[in-house]
Image 1 (cartoon, rainbow, N blue to C red):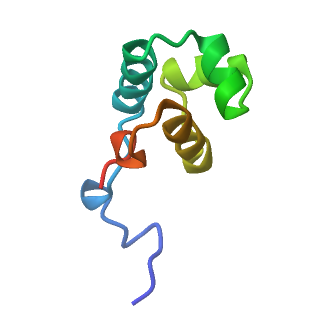
Image 2: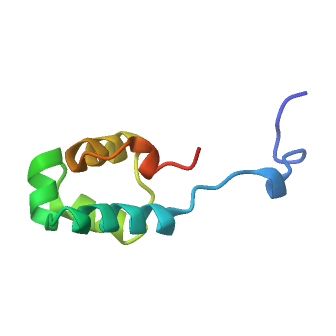
Length: 81
């Protein structure tokens, strides 16, 4: 069976809770005493990208991995497994 809009059961679809990820990023950053600028320098993302992620925008998993590495936390901190 192929998935089409007609047979996709959206009630079973998993969505990433963007605000929970945003809160986890912010909390992890603040826990180690980093400013957004510090995190930007450490992970190589722009300050604007980090602000967007912390505001709850959808985040690319690769960006979240870079943030996790910079904050020295497991990537699973930001991913729902």
